[in-house]
Length: 115
Image 1 (cartoon, rainbow, N blue to C red):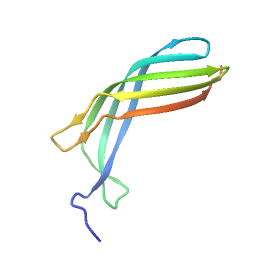
Image 2 (cartoon, rainbow, N blue to C red; image 1 turned 180 degrees about the vertical axis):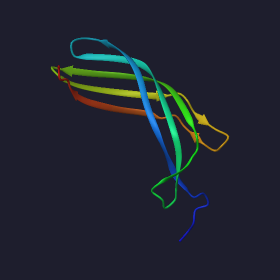
Image 3 (cartoon, rainbow, N blue to C red; image 1 turned 45 degrees about the horizontal axis):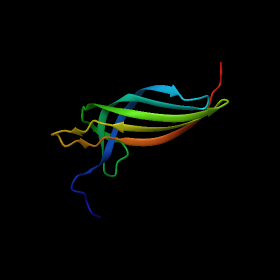
Image 4 (cartoon, rainbow, N blue to C red; image 1 turned 90 degrees about the vertical axis):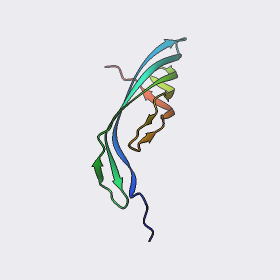
């Protein structure tokens, strides 16, 4: 059995994603939007090889800033939205933590219920 030089298999942390988007309604069905986002990562811990439990609090509180764009269609109460999030912040610490910005593309499908 081989033993790794660095016995860390990964990191565990809380990730809170917040965004604000301003939408423009093109017609009765289609809309576009742009906005900004702030993401907060806290409670960094690392996980040792061959262990399921987090170990060692690194004490990081990191903030990411970025932009996002959305486009969507809605018909009756069904809504389909496509989004792209482009984060701008890179974290390069002297303590060895090097995180590149997260870029994501996704879709949501929803049904509106009026209360």
